[in-house]
Image (cartoon, rainbow, N blue to C red):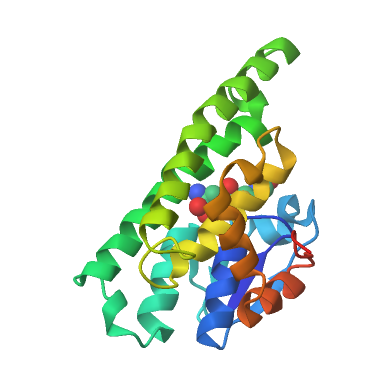
Length: 209
Ligand SMILES: N[C@@H](CCC(=O)N[C@@H](CS)C(=O)NCC(=O)O)C(=O)O
């Protein structure tokens, strides 16, 4: 199996899960732009990462679906099964990170999708920041209530997704330091061998230290 990633992208969450499970999945780290070339468009016509290519040629896209597959196939902990309390919470957190937080970042990374003029794009970005702040408040509260530093009671794939979403704040006017639990979260993640391995495989450096 091959997992297609690109520096700085949400594919990092899947890459971290691969590292945590020591799963036999090769990481193929594209350079920016390669995702829009015919070779990759043949894999994912939307030109987005992540994509997981199976040995029989089948392709799975969508970060949360890939994480669900990795957990089901390689994750050995029954507490993360979807019919268990922790597994239910992990599914909920991943859906929130993907469909709410990640989707809102599109207003920052691709404002042209939602506006037709430079002024309109500026307004879209402004709206995205206004929407992201309470989302990061909520994530900060979740981490605080979980007894920290993890988002849930224990380290989960939601931490991997949260880590990359929090890294995207570096590219916005929002400061991670406004969310102290998430600063601690980032530091914990960056002291984790699996995270460091995944960062290296994706051509990324740590944010802290
Ligand atoms: N819904 C998809 C979104 C994937 C996505 O937005 N990928 C971005 C990186 S985070 C991407 O590949 N962007 C490159 C592009 O669109 O050209 C998922 O959750 O996997």
